[in-house]
Image (cartoon, rainbow, N blue to C red):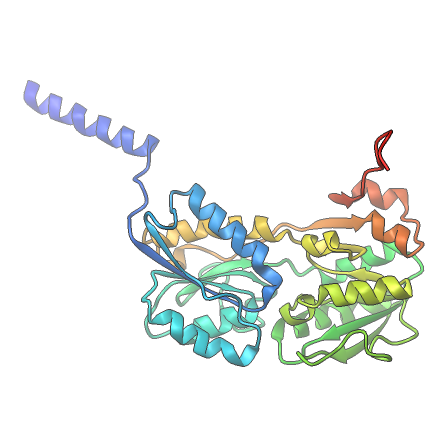
Length: 330
């Protein structure tokens, strides 16, 4: 009897130790990355940082397969086929075009796919059920807030009533953004001007950004946002307000944005990735929604001669402002 009691105590103590200190991540996992354009590299950095915090360290128990961002949409399929030759345990795909290709090419094999971010995973056909993903793909979506971003643009720059939206007609994320914008624009007394955007488009080309535009609004779409430097230059030269959904691009000179922080989204995806790497079924990991924030670049506001209302600044999550030089500095 004493021996049985002793065995039970040992068993319970072992269970308690397991609950306090969960098992270490299994070794030798292979993670492949399908990245479309340079636009989401901060998201990838956050994802890898989050994996390291979870115990997956490249070169020790993690092999990372990443050949660099794919710049042309037509190259996504061959890039994905090349990644599959490495027999990955998990595929990280970003953003929507990459997620769709990864989902299509892994449907038969069932290799788990994790996306971050996707604008509207249901409308784009990436998943059918966000609460219980039905196939082998889940990830982090963006909240449907393009209408709120248009409203926040007007709050930051109250003179704005004619907004130019460049968009990639081949991208479902861009179409989802446009649908949201056209729904709210009449209530905001905003006229939307739209033009297709492609790899060959030059935002600085005379006439591409309409002369009557008060502002430029970049939709949630990788190709357009990958040209952020060009749009910042055009908008600064013409004194136009520029709105983007990414914090990193407001830091690069866009006036404002209501949207996500790439590194944070990547870290959010990494927590889901750890569950997939230890064998949790995809159906047990619902699609999550990224947090959103209001960003304002005061240096850009000064550059284009705009006074941002104090009421807006009090609500902003991040304000970019170059500190004045200290006494004695040039």
